[in-house]
Amino acid sequence: MRSVLITGAAGFIGGYTVDEFVNAGWHVYALVHNSVTPGLEQMAASGDVTLIRGDLTQFAAFEASLQHELERRDEKLDAVVHCAGRASDVGRRHEFRGLNYESVLKLGELSLRLEVGRFVFISTTDVYGLRDFHGETETELPLQNNRHNPYPEFKIAAEGWIRAHIHAERYVIIRPAAVWGVGDPTLSPRIVDFLRSSPWIIHFGKWRGQNRWPCAYVRNVAKAILLAVTRTEAAGRAFNILDSEHTTMDEFYRILASIALPEKQFRSVTLPLWVGQAIGGVVSGISDALNLNHPFTDPSLYALYSVSSHLDFSNAAFLELLEGAGQTILSRDEGIEELKRSVER
Image 1 (tube, rainbow, N blue to C red):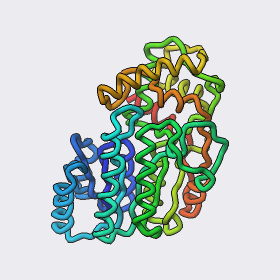
Image 2: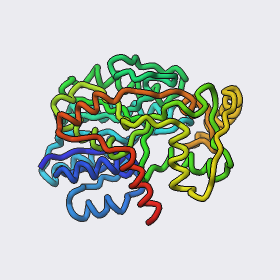
Image 3: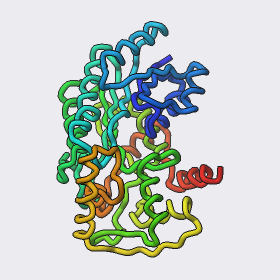
């Protein structure tokens, strides 16, 4: 049986990725930090998953636990999928460095020592910067941190280290856009919480909410990660992962509102960008000073630039990867129906 280590296995993307590999017949070594989901506990009880409780900032202890479990099962790792990290638009720089860069180096070095066949790093489309895009591909876009934020800064640095130290046949970089779906703990709840207290959908700047919001249905992200491990043509490449549907920012707000707040009717209002910059500067300053995991209110300055930019990336390489595996991308409607069912339950 093939085996894979998945970090951040109790997280949003990590949890779906564990499901994807288990359903494909892999044994998963699931690194969890604090909490364990009921699904993980069930898979551990059935023997499909081996839980490893640890912290990547305490790497020696984690490595010892992993080696112990590998020896106990007399297995060799075939792949490492690094989902863990700090995904936030606020926080102190050293927190991002430790979780989004230094942990990548240590895991990458471990993969080299263990001669793992494929190392998959979960990055982000934020490595292209926040500005207006018009369907460019991965190879056409330079990496840049034009908003001077530590989140893309250390994702870019980690990608650079991987290319410099791991042979192209043994790595793949996955760049999800704005990941959504059942169980999303951050993006969708932030929007719904704001809409719950507001009579308006508020946009900022020239696009007036008609800019593309790059939705990435979480099940498509998990499919991409499995293919990154199993498909030879994926080696040494980076893939943008986002839905094929062109969803505007205003549409995404209204999709979430129709599911979570069906009794409310909203009118869209557009404010000048400078108003958002003033609010976002205060929100980000306080949130950074307190080292919060998420801003205490919205918008943060980084979130403002994100929701007011036309983030229209190409997913052609991902679609080609799916086609080569005889698969198709899951649709936005499928994700919406799953969200509706989860609310009804």
